[in-house]
Image 1 (cartoon, rainbow, N blue to C red):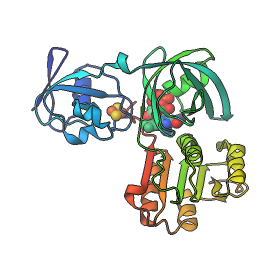
Image 2: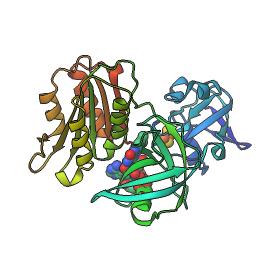
Image 3: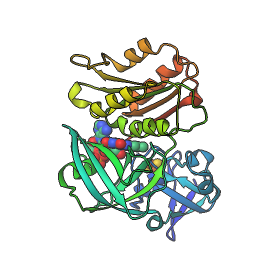
Image 4: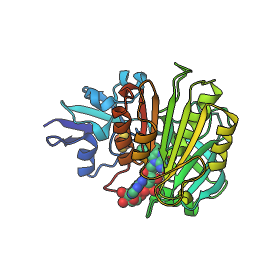
Length: 324
Ligand SMILES: Cc1cc2nc3c(=O)[nH]c(=O)nc-3n(C[C@H](O)[C@H](O)[C@H](O)COP(=O)(O)OP(=O)(O)OC[C@H]3O[C@@H](n4cnc5c(N)ncnc54)[C@H](O)[C@@H]3O)c2cc1C
Ligand code: FES
């Protein structure tokens, strides 16, 4: 059984246990959120021992070279000595400058930072609750050239961080976050490649950034944006997306609802079936899928079955800790 040394104490890791699970079992708390290797909140450094390659997925090469890894997916193969990444060094301070209701369950929060944040539209940041430091990921809907960071936050029943934003957050509140992180963003490697952007609920947040980034970089290929919700009340930014489609002939906006009448230019029914019917051949397309993890995984599969190359499918599943 590998031994983990952390802050001068030794902890035994059970067979198949992750570093995060072992530390938690011993009452040692380090920052974490998604528990599945997505959000990078649990980033940790091995000062002795080598982390398994799988535990470094999605980390920048510079971090990998310094032996950083993700504690929630690290099943150690040898003894390791750890130091939690210097959190203070990575934290960015910001101020809430706007809070707007986008529909009955989604708010838009805009943040200002002292120095411009170096990010790519579609990446996410890990926001810390101002009192408890509980950390959650939120995607950036803004563009780096805009002088604010924009988040779209859905209210989750009994949600600690989403509840803070909906009920307690006020203009002028100070907010700390880490990041940016994530690799679901636009690159201009092929300006003529058709793009399919599919989001459910606040899955629109990264896609809104990606869409506008692609246009700003001169993307010429078709861009089809499917935004889905249970009913029309769950959609948002409809005027903005219709306007982008009117202004850019390559942009097609398809709002989708499961219940009720289809909105203008939209579809009614199950999103997976809608995609299978309207995009039966995705050979050569680049696909971006964001939002609820179960739906994202199902849609990725659908797009792959319709011919999209796996390496051309980018996704941001909004994974959450089911044990929270
Ligand atoms: C990469 C990434 C990007 C994300 N981007 C966004 C974004 O742009 N906008 C956004 O609104 N969210 C986004 N999320 C989800 C977000 O990070 C939080 O998980 C969400 O806001 C809930 O946090 P909370 O603290 O409010 O709820 P918690 O206090 O963590 O959870 C309260 C209860 O609700 C359950 N729960 C948590 N989330 C959900 C859910 N989605 N559906 C059903 N039950 C749930 C928990 O298991 C728990 O029982 C993203 C997640 C990831 C990993
Ligand atoms: S990556 Fe480890 S908690 Fe999210």
